[in-house]
Image (cartoon, rainbow, N blue to C red):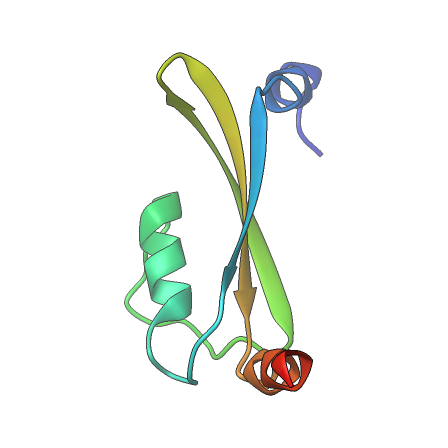
Length: 84
């Protein structure tokens, strides 16, 4: 668990955004997210199910909370069924 100062700072934001990465298997969704979060590694195991990362940014004086969902390939099929 994080310290109380980490928890306090993570709760202070003006806007929150949920971002979903959806795409074919093996195209680099996880690597792209890891690069954005600053935890890039040469190898990442395939995502099974779903994983998420949180990043805080300040843009134009506003503090943003980004929740970035990294989905496995199965969610493409689920998304396509919803569109039907």
